[in-house]
Image (cartoon, rainbow, N blue to C red; front, side, top):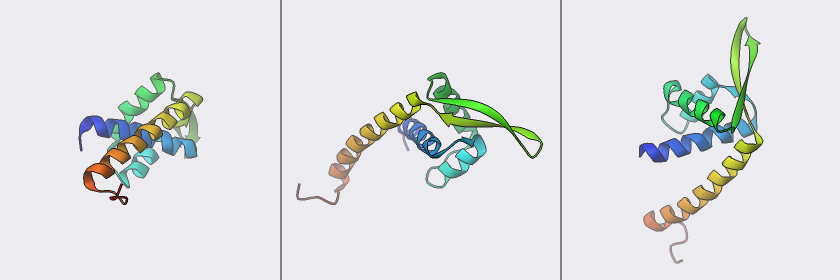
Length: 106
């Protein structure tokens, strides 16, 4: 997969998962890995960038005697997720055209 395309999809996946509820990095990696090849080492720069952009915020909570960093989507993150969804719908129309979608008769 094209690295730039994957980067955008990874951002959208993170925001989508966080829209469902707060979670921590390892769990995010596990959820994303169900449908996209990724690793914690590729996920953490995405999380830092999204935090810097104001799309998510972090907090720590104790779990089994250790502090765990949780991520939470912000209002700006929800706005960005909606923008991603609009972009993806447009891309889907183009992809369907190229590979032949369900409505080939146009």
